[in-house]
Image (cartoon, rainbow, N blue to C red):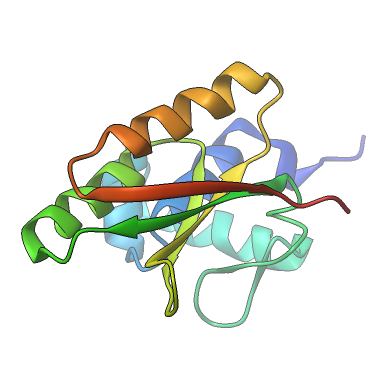
Length: 144
């Protein structure tokens, strides 16, 4: 019987945690997922061997992010407290894969997990636009 490592529920939960915050330590991941550190270490090794992670850190490969086809460009008010709460909001939304600070007309590039339903994507956009720090948000769909 062939075992598909990347498809297990545990590995999917681990990948979801890494999408939210790739800087977490194994101890933090262990606590967040309520799993032993050794189990986390083994899962990380399996995900690297399977090609979902690369390098010594937790860099998600394109294969692990292949559903990321939508993004939102966001401008925020220049206020450190509001920006911090905005980043907390981004980390709390399960469909947000990652976000980057960028230069130019916008302040953030937010990658969204491709929603099966347009309503899910609209919900994420609504949550982001409703935050007090947001001045403007523009959506983009990346067509492969």
